[in-house]
Image 1 (cartoon, each protein chain N blue to C red):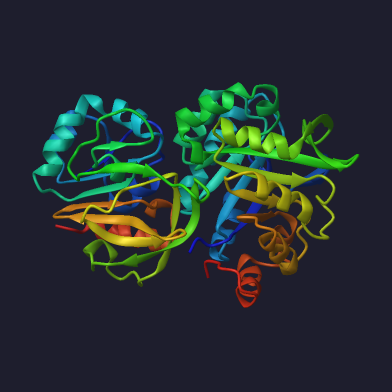
Image 2 (spheres, rainbow over the protein chains, first blue to last red):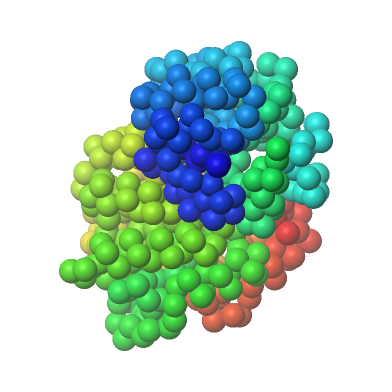
Length: 189
Length: 250
């Protein structure tokens, strides 16, 4: 079973439909999940508060090596902390999430993703494909950068660490290209 | 590089797409989901749904519509029109919209902008500004453009950006419906004064108008009738833009 973590704000119907996962915030489900998708929308602090009851379970499961796909805030919470607000990130990847500066602070719209590493989740998707972004914060480059995107200079738009994938863009909003990525994750083993 | 966005607007009443001029002679012109799907297949980057009629059962009709759209299309969409309740906004996002926009309510209660953006995220909080040029400045109008508040539209844009808005949807009342081009001065003024994305709206008649809006600095440009009537598709506009050096998703 793929657990799609419910943070109470994001719409998860596309992800549910494409991956066949189960939308849940239930400890029992997370403990038994074979894969986890964490599609965060909202703020760093809000999301961490919302999932606090299952926080330790989530961290245990992610560290256990099952495939994890963090989308947007689901990527950011893997880090230690964020400039967006208080809250202790999962600390699985070191570093602090930063706010864009010197550019429009909401990086919103379709932008291209350049693959640095060939990842299974990007199989069949041409390099430099467009994905939909909507965020004001970005994760630091602390050695796990797998994808990058040019927004007045390249930032980390995707990370990979063992079975942990984190992407800053929204595959569920990126048309057919995004659906392909979700399907790829769905068939990962 | 971030692509410039082509955005289609759909006027909705009672869960159906409607056409009408100045809220008069409103005609049913189809199912919003069918039209949205057509737009997606034609390369649209985003869709905005404007609910133009407040009816008693509107909350349910709107939430059903949002769910249907979300389950059928996989590009971003924004919902607005008469929203004034934070729980309604959360529920629209929850049901699958990416962004909500507010207009009159933001003018009357600017203090809610911060609350909304804290709850659903700044990037998901769009403020729509209807601006009318008169007596040497752009003035903010509310209630569907019928009331001139006298407020300076550019100053208002700066204010809402500082309060937590993630994007501005800026409509010129002067050019809206004319199909003679966007209000370039308004767009340029706004873009130069805020550091959040600005969507140009009102006046699109053809590809050259989009080029004008993007050259003025707009991040996205919105149109309704040229797409609805099938005069141009998003791909038509984008091909023209690419030929003229604008980065688009094609």
